[in-house]
Length: 257
Image (cartoon, rainbow, N blue to C red):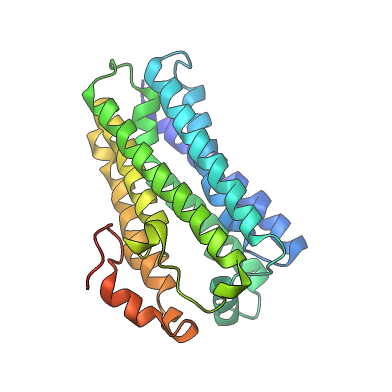
């Protein structure tokens, strides 16, 4: 089966979802809802690719289940976290740089850009969902990496939510639980999860799809993840400089003295 028509069908579905969410953002006067859209894009992508494959195939069913568990959990968490908080400061900065007319510019600067990035990151899903190759050891490795990623991401989000919900911790640095070993355990979880999907795609003989998790790694480390989040956090939390001296930025490790 030629995967290219299915790949472009996936891109069209993501662009349509981005367009609808952009319309909703105009009514709500905030583009922060794109954060909730991000994990849902991958579920839509997986369902689109799965529709062109054999639903009952073991790898297809496995990948659809893994994507659904991860994306729905993350979408619910992000929506709950952002509920009633107004527009995120990242988007306020983008808005300030692109006025006047940001409401229209946000269609391509934020929403369609997210759709394009999700399409590229999700390339391993295309190979994994459309392959007829039997399951093998690489699929098992992929599931283990996915499990590590989901545990880090879910536990990290839960621990941070509990910490920030306590008024006594206002202005303090979260350095407990998984955050004692990594300054961004949830981002590390995302990294592990997508390389897990690539391992499954590799088992399906779709090795060239490494571009997807590689792009995710760059985004997490250099663009919208660690670099952006830590840009001014030291100004908002005085104890963060000491935290950075003893704690790894991304990959978990024992704290330094």
